[in-house]
Amino acid sequence: MAERKDYPICFDGLFRQNIVLTSGLVTAPVIVAATTAERAAILSLSFFMISYFSILICRMIPKKISYTVRIILYAMVAATVFIPTAILVNTLFPETAPTVSLYIEIIVVNSLLLAKTESRFYLITYAAMAVDAFVYIVGYAIVAFAVALIRELLAFGTVFGAHICDALMPAAKSPFFGFFLVGIFAAACRAYYNRKKAAGEKEADVLRKEAEA
Amino acid sequence: MDILTKIISTAMLSIFVQNAIFERAFGSNVVIYASRKDSHVTGFTIGLTAMTTVASMITFFLDGLLLPMKYGWLFMPLVYVAVISILYIAALLFLWRVFPKTFSKVRKYAHLAIFNCTVIGALFLNSSYGSDIWSYIGYGFGTGVGFFLACLLLNIAHEKLDSDKIPKAFRGYPIMLVYIGVISLAFYALVGYTVDF
Image 1 (cartoon, rainbow over the protein chains, first blue to last red):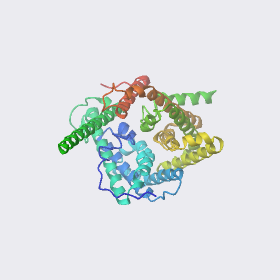
Image 2: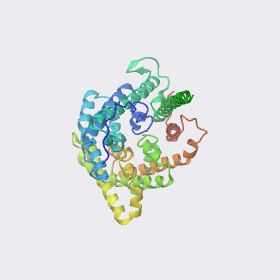
Image 3: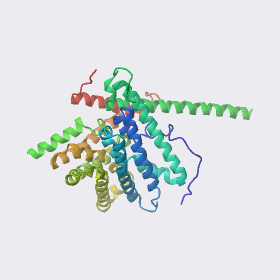
Image 4: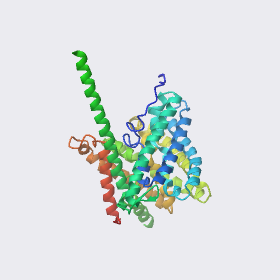
């Protein structure tokens, strides 16, 4: 059995391995439902509650249980955690929460829980996993808010509900605009890391040449 | 004849008007993954269509019990996941016993085709808009066909979207999203939406 690694806190989940921008694991709520900051807050809170607590619980499921059964257990745990989450968000946001309820409900089968638990979280210690999962969720919330704020300004002319200007582009609240925006964000994120990687390689080349000389 | 008309019209609704991928973005990552290989397009479509259709039939009866309850909606995800899980195990057992070769091929990605937002999203939409069992079946089947349509459109464009002609930063996943956005816009026009500006 592979030994579990306890590695330093890794912030890759924020941008470099962001679950919306690079791996595209949980895109639907951001693309369709994140049209205002309030909605982004509901989605982020729901995603945090359902995914984080489910991951913490699911990590305790023994790996010797067959993969087929584990996947079912993950989804069942998330569906159970959905109950207090739904009560909480409906209490905090009684008017807006029902309008995005569909996108809260589908979080119970999100790929962060179903895929990352297997491919990443099982390989590290419990404490490292708790931090790692939290970083991934913060990364999700950053993208959800970024997308939502742009769309809110363009579609409604407001920011956090405060009137700023007339609606510049009402179509910004449509799903197709969400696809465009997330696609552009994903490309920008990749361009930044490509450039950073190229700069790192260049610097390594210079250092190697200096050492050889 | 009325039944067939109802099934077909609801299926058309879920393929074109409420397409799971282009209108709801359900399972965008799954459709991008599935569209990479021709064999995956077939495998995912068959698995997903069978699941949405059969699960819709079952959840019609369960919705009848849950929806009238005051807090029934809180337990719907749990009930839907239970239904999907039972069907998932039944499907794997069936494949293992009857088509062992297919089973060994699909077991690696079967969970991706079953436990995703497209399947569970279809069940939730059915609970909101479905009126009788025929509309549930039509919607479930149409969701699978709509997924196939999305897979096919992405599969056709996959080579071009991954080519050197696309800027490096956009190649792969980002341009796929933009491409889905363009098709989503086309679907908007097809349905007859007009943007109010």
